[in-house]
Image (cartoon, rainbow, N blue to C red):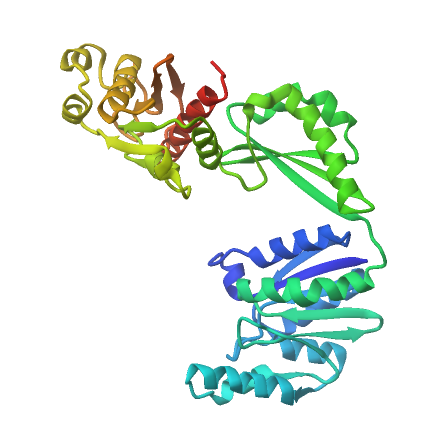
Length: 414
């Protein structure tokens, strides 16, 4: 079976919202072995929706529409589908009664516009919406199916899980399962990773490998196609072991795991505490670490020491050292890490100083120069980085690099 997704909404074309619905459905279709070769996005216009559906019917077996089922004038998906299948829109009494019940429970008078949501192409199968007022539906035409679901993500996901996927699965004819796993890495470029893993990449057809560059490092996606989930998992795990044998220290997480979650697990497991001293990142490292629930078990405090006086007063960085070496120097960074650890009484201190930009740089110390230091009872280290000229990106990268230095210490990478 070949499926196709058509996302409907002018707001999608204008870039006002992200199309998370098609991403979610793509993953669900892959899990049951349904091939998804095409996606379309169109605005709230009956003729353009019809055009998109006709294109899809020429090349796909199951078309899923997302959006355009609301009660307002720009919600025109039903009209487009009814014209395509040649069926008039009629009131579904059962859907209408459920709609009335929803408004009665909420104590709201239902408008005439809302009644539109209970009209469907004649003969359509109704898909219950447990989280909203717009039911979905499925129509058949010449042996193919057109499903329409609302665009609100939490409504869409419930209907996909409860109704759409079971319906498609019954008709997919025992397709193979497609399963993916993502290994998240930090600290090495995509090109260098590709060199190290070149032979593994070239050998991998099923499961396959792909590199995905992002703001938080390079992800390696492993995708397997098998008769069932268990077999796909085994295939993926075998390839993952080969990859880990080469770059274990660079992998911080799997699938949606963030680097701060990974570090949090390590700190909890080792029973260690941390304090962070920040200058150029302005508290971003502390904020990122505390994004993880339960971080109070290991995160003691953060020092935002933006000025030289703050470094001297809060962290006991020697004024003479700042005058001699400059606030942006490896010597000051390590003193900041030491000061954070000693003032907080924690096991580990991290210190960061740099020039985020766009101003403040010199020929000797350009914009993007950053020093990150770590201080612990058994280890002290500092590292220099030369990043770019974009202020917010420099802050983001510095935060990730600092948390990664912490991670490397916790896993024994010197």
